[in-house]
Image (tube, rainbow, N blue to C red):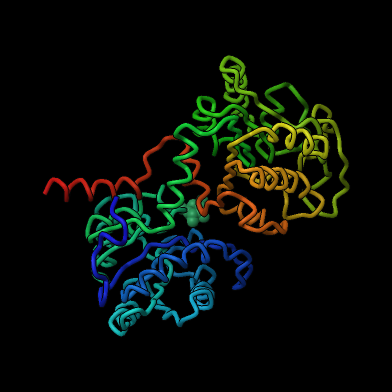
Length: 407
Ligand code: 3PG
Ligand code: MG
């Protein structure tokens, strides 16, 4: 893949950068600006090289039309603060406002376009519709830099199609992220453990399949763990359960046994009467969740057990919180895993936290980024990478280089 340096002298050139600025918002307040901060170095580098930087990004999942609550305006303000320079915000993506902002930009200036997904072409299923929107985007620039790691698994106009229309390069954030994930897939230092949480097993099937070939230990918590407990014929009360996945999970447990992969499940659970911080809750054995209660976190003994199982690991990947950490009574399990990873990082192990939610979780619990080896900005993207899937946003950059080598 070509790096930014391979694009040559950028002075006076308009460079379209695809960043992932999809941050959690409470109204118009950004509750975790991790992705914006992660996007700053590439934008600064381009601006410093004299480029006219045109940043494009999405926020949330609007359905191809403008919606106020998904506007990137608050992000433009925060980006400006972090860059220490004004960011011109275009109130559309490829329309009059965007064209005017790009035309007015001087060398080193930064423009942020409004949410890409306000345009149906961005996420269109047909190649033709996406290509048409990609042509409008390409019309705003002389070169393209792919820096939105969190979206490289999406075959979308600003990630995939536009990279075929302009001289394209990979940004530093994507380079770093891929470099770290490569260390997990190519000969990781062992023992290699993966901690998985989050709501749904069905989102993680592919990656579990793959991890059963590569990891030494799989620690499971979060909402998805109840399908694992059910697969062991445990009563799970009113906990999240994907009944249609129980058989698949039983298959995983068998496969793990055959392959000598240790699957670690919680031994106790915080069980509550409702999904609420004030609900009555108690710690119960994982095999004895009362019929009228739901598990909302792994219990304290499980926290100790998980830390114990991580202690000798040299490589750990973690995706997904262990419980409903946003509510204080159910945050201890996630904090216990974070604490264990912090210790391992100090001892020189490679620890990787994957995904917007997990990253937000550790920050919300008061940990800082530098206590971990790497905090990935991409959840889905990092899981698909570990799954061994082709990521369209990366493949397209490889393809482009190959074509140029041939031509
Ligand atoms: C994310 O938050 O997962 C990335 O920004 C990608 O967004 P998406 O899942 O809506 O495509
Ligand atoms: Mg996602």
